Amino acid sequence: MVLSPSSAPTALWVVPVSDLAGVARHVLDVARAGIPGWRLVVLAPPGALPERLRDLGATVVEAPFGPDHGLRASAASLREVVRREQPAVVHSHLSYADIVVALASRRGPRLVTTEHGIARDDVVYHRSGAKARVMRGVHTLRLRRFAAAIAVSRATADAMREKWHPRVPVTVVPNGVDVVSRPAALAPRPPRAPGLRILSLARLSPEKRLPALVEGFAELHRSRPEARLTLAGTGPEQEALAAQVERLGLGDVVAMPGFVDPEAAMAEHDVLAMLSVWENCSYALLDAAARGMGVVASDVGGNPEILPSASLVDAGDTVAVAKALERQGLDPTTRPGLDGWPGVDDMCARIATTYAAAGAGR
Image (tube, rainbow, N blue to C red; front, side, top):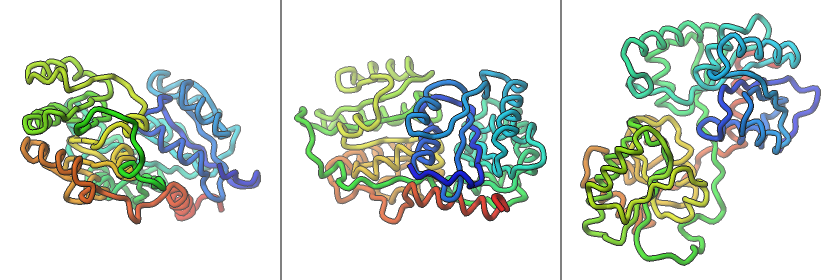
């Protein structure tokens, strides 16, 4: 990890969750690499993320913060850390942190936000149109307090501008990924039974459109009976998906193991499939492409910014999904790569540039 000098200005990253899914990967990568010219401090609730950050040697404040702790405690924790650390930048991640930072921060540090999870269609993340309209208004107002806004893809930036009308420029800083020196497609594999191995690494929830993947796999299985599908993860759709698998007679070839280690799972599979309604800048897709895996994803959100057309499908076209899974599994020449994609150091440098453009650290 690159350590900033003690005289460097402090950037306080505010994260309202402590599990190791989603935004935690972004936080850990930045903590590992360091933001050039800045001292990084992370505020997060107790849990796995602070533990992992401490293992990296990062400065962590573990305090009551986030939805599980309530607005009053979260605001009090933030104010105490700001008083003690005197950051030049308070950088929030995820909606809850954005709102608390906007409400609780007084004059002093510059406020910066990174948007990881917005969709063009509000119903992806909100159950009702009324709630979506309320949250759209809240984000429009809170952004007036921010000096800079970062989006993880061009599609994310476009959605932010369309919905929230920010007064500050939205800077696109994609999630950085370092390409492995030896792609998984070329690396030795442990012995296994023959056949295509398809992997889903996603929450078992409606927006991931996993029933469409199961249907596509069923079509593939008719011509490739040796193929296997792993639906890794948990979520509210678990029972419905299990019932669909049984109804289609796929119980012997579809596994639902719950949480898995992503690295180990990717090493054991040929293709990563993700047919979500929307993705912003998926680490799973990036990691799969960096490893040399086949990738099949829906043509939505930031996916076309990561993947070539050979990897993109209409999730509702079962035959197209099956053909893409087969092609990506059997023909490595059609698989995506990450040539020219920013690495983690590049991502961190772009974050530092955004801070400077916002007038922070002067």
